[in-house]
Amino acid sequence: AQSVTQPDIHITVSEGASLELRCNYSYGATPYLFWYVQSPGQGLQLLLKYFSGDTLVQGIKGFEAEFKRSQSSFNLRKPSVHWSDAAEYFCAVVDTGGGNKLTFGTGTQLKVEL
Amino acid sequence: DTAVSQTPKYLVTQMGNDKSIKCEQNLGHDTMYWYKQDSKKFLKIMFSYNNKELIINETVPNRFSPKSPDKAHLNLQINSLELGDSAVYFCASSIIGRGELFFGEGSRLTVL
Image 1 (cartoon, one colour):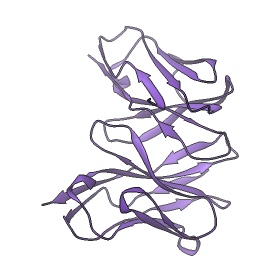
Image 2 (cartoon, chains in turn orange, brown):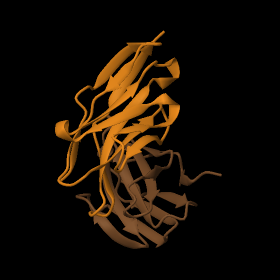
Image 3 (tube, chains in turn orange, red):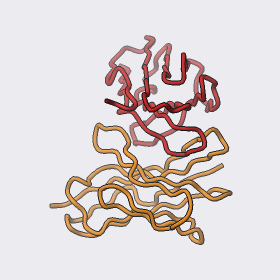
Image 4 (tube, one colour):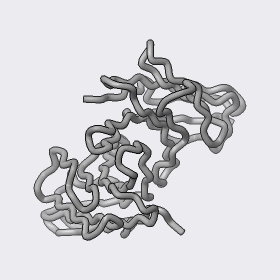
């Protein structure tokens, strides 16, 4: 069964600093990978996705992620964090052969210091 | 024009009661899901329907009953509510095989 690990429960960065959120996955075949963001009291919004092709994917709000098969990783990055980026971030992998089941990591809470 | 909408957004109820949450999507997707988010923000799939057929049924107490009258609607009936059912329930939809899920804003259930 597929699984996702987000090793950092909380991360605090200063506004304007760069950000990297870690994600490791376990999946037998080529994974479909996602990053979602959840602002307080809100639903989940898709930031970006990787299906195949270019391993560096661009998303909304200035985020990008790099797929590294050799490391089973799909880390999320942003060069300069804004205070409005404070939220919960979830990495996820989908099993397209298993009813499109999306399995989430435990999330990383990002705090931004002004 | 909300893509995936859930009602109600908040429910507060007593233990032992029965409640339902409704979900509708206007994206033309063929698959819908219910996810539960606990107090630690962990998201776990409960059910999924594809064209009104149940395709994912995780280990969930049978007090939880999903129903899909058509592919644009998915409801969740919860009977004999318990304290541990307090959570945020998210509805989502997708096109099967395409991976990407679109989520509603969630329904926060509080059982007292």
